[in-house]
Amino acid sequence: MSFAAKRQSTIDRRRALYEEAGEILEREYESDLSLDQVALQVAASRRQLQRAFAEAGETSFRTYLQKVRMARAAELLRESALPVNQVASSVGYRQPAQFAKAFRRHHGSPPSSFRSGAAGPVAA
Image (cartoon, rainbow, N blue to C red; front, side, top):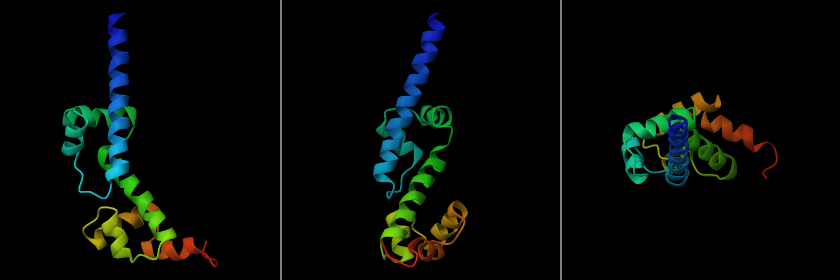
């Protein structure tokens, strides 16, 4: 019985770490974030945080961060007239070409095509 209780507490702890780290990534996605930095912020080891992402989030730190950045990039492309290189910079990419490649892989089209397709005939 104590094993089951301990296991549940481990599950709860990993979920809490995952959620807390996720909030940091959502808030600081434009920064040069690393797993080690975020682990330090949530008072966990690198390995504990990796396990939290794997078990509670069924993803990895890097994949989660990229998903957040790509969602923000899509918003910026749809809702602003910022040049692609500024969108890249504002979501944490130092190299516009690296951003464009990641964006294309994630969304299925280059940022410039996404913007023109997302904007449609009438700007909203």
